[in-house]
Every structure is written in structure tokens, then in C-alpha cells.
Image (spheres, rainbow, N blue to C red):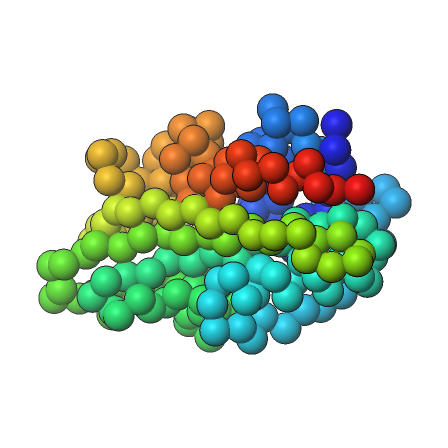
Length: 199
């Protein structure tokens, strides 16, 4: 199996990456795994998902000496002109506070009936020598009026993908991964041969 380091401190993202990539012959290492050095703090100040994913992949690969996979993803709501977008994880001002982010989102959508939204994910791969490439995945859906479900993370309890009646937080993990933005981006990464370029 190919081995690659995930440039994330988000254990939920790490677990999804592992579940999605293991059948593809890719072992995903995470911070704290044996032999993995501490990950550097990377300031996500890019204006796009791609810019942030590339920055994380390149900086972590250079600092650790590992071939690295980085993900930047978020929710884009039509009625909010694409917000929260690249600020999705810190929409409410406190990084990683999923509950406060959801509360702020639902408050912003009060009285709005156009609830169309999409999740977007960009994956970047890098070696210590530099960037290999990127891949993108998207899934469209809608924001419901109150959270449902206990699985998933982030905005999953309020996002229903097109063609479904259940939120991402109500779907079994394998079903969510088969249609999610992250699943599609990782599938595109595999399909485009980017992993074959790892040394």
C-alpha cells in the first residue's frame, strides 16, 4: 500500500480519508501515529479552497519529509452569496466549534426559503520537493431548518444532499462517503493518477 500523511488535526476528516482510501490501496497516516513528527501550524489565509489545500500540503510535506495529502473544504450557501465558504470551520469565530457554526448559519437563513447549498472539497498532494497536483469534489443539496442526526461533523446535521431525504448526519458513514464532496475529491485524486506520482 502507498502511505501518505494527512495534513489535518481534524480526527473526523482523518477517519473519512482512511475509510475512503483504504480500498484504493492507500494508507493514511495522521498526527500522533508512530513515526509521524509533529505537524506544523499552517495559517489558512488563502482566498480559495485550492489555495489553502495547496499551502497545507506543501508546507507539511516540506516540514515533515512525508508525502502529504491536504484537504480544504466548506459549505457554500446560495442565499448567503457563497458563505461561509473558506471560513466554514471558523464561521462563528471559534475554530472547530461545530455547534456554534450551525447556530450562526441557521440564524443567517431565518426567513429565507431558498436553502440551496453545496459542499466543496479540494484535495492537494505534495512531496517534500513540492506540489504534485489537486482534485476537486462537490455535492449539492439544501439546508434544513433544524439539525437532524448524530453522525458526521460540521454542518452535516443540517445538510440534505440532492436525491436524499436524510441529512449527512443521518446517513451511514459508508453511504455518506460514497456521495460526499470529500469522497468525490478523493475519488478524483485516485482516478487522475496523482497517487501514482508519489515517490
